[in-house]
Length: 577
Image 1 (cartoon, rainbow, N blue to C red):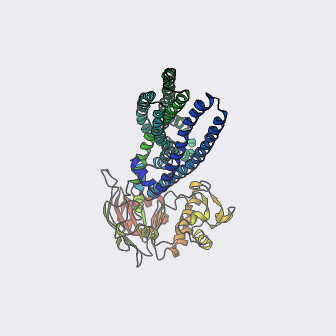
Image 2 (cartoon, rainbow, N blue to C red; image 1 turned 30 degrees about the vertical axis):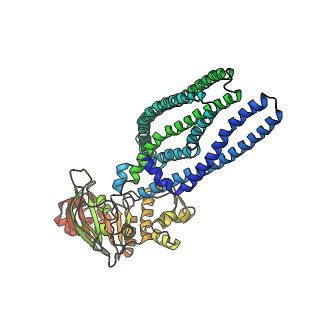
Image 3 (cartoon, rainbow, N blue to C red; image 1 turned 90 degrees about the horizontal axis):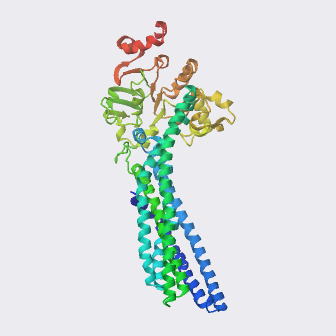
């Protein structure tokens, strides 16, 4: 998965990667040339007392060092740009993929896990690319070039490299192999931490209201301890790596000095050559360490790549068909034809055999007990879920045959839990129509009975709204969500228990103001209050996912015991009539 992901997202930057490699080769060549110059200074300058030669060769060393530094800086610059662009592209692809998921897909992965994958997991892969561009590319060139230069200095002494490098690779490889399962566990536990944090921050009021701080602290503490335990295990393994590297490096250096001293005494080797050989030996071993260090990052990046690829490779369960309808002419209509819906793996259907028709200018109200399937029924219209049986038709066309953008532009949904985005009142209203004017926004606010409190807010349409709309009341949040749907002026209005936080007087005024706006539209209202829906053209009564009644208020009073029972629990006999 990691290789596939790297190949896919690094392909646009092949030219820059080639440039980074060429720059790195020049840098490494300069680095490998310096020990040879140093050896010449020792053998032909210091030992012979030739000061002029020392100055000349030293000047060459300074020039080579300057070239090395310049090329290293440029290589790191372009390597960093590639890594940052790579991370940006993956995050953009993930965001585009997740926003195309159905509600069912999002529920399957979970919001905390999706957030972790888009942030933490992408960062792990990005770090691997960054380290590869700035460190790993230089390692093999340094190793190969260093071995050649070491053999050039003294062939028999180079046998030390044949022992030191495999020992170092085996030692570090065994440590990395033990880290891989720990990284897999770590990512899962980071998901769990994010999930608990998200729940506790979002539900802070509930936690305090029921004095659950000790229990929630204990739950967070348990997840934190699990993550800490895994991090400590990986940390201890990492702590072994550098002492191991230094042990091999120092042991090899001692062996080189020991054997090299005997060869110098025998006249088979010069002092400068030994110094250069030790420099090459350290360069080779440090390059092995750097390569191993990047290899150490690879297991965690591989785990993250699997998680990222799981998202990118997941086709949304709600997708356009190749010949999708892109236009819905004619008067608006909505029809449910023997609709059934059940969640994957569920034994019982959430909705079964639901049938009704609602035409332009008509209002269909849906009422039933909690958990009867009312919200699920509404969610089938914009294809937040797809039916598992029957058909949902908009303007006579099955919603599964309609282009998603066309369908969504046709529908205005006010969800059961109205959500406002961080920004201003105006930006929230313009989520429905980015081209809406201030007059359009004020008109929608007027109809939604929200104009009075928006005018009282500092900045009015530019008044700030906190994430989730937490700086306004529940009723104000509902009215702003209704105004947002009105800005779009859709052909189908879906109100999912959108009047529950309003008092009866505001509810009545809002419904009266809505009447002219919805005169040419299909309107579906899910409600718990009979007073909100008693004047609807049709009322659908749902019980345990089944349709138990369909008709007007007065018809259902006589023909549907379930509806009559609901009415009796809320209204007096006189009010019911």
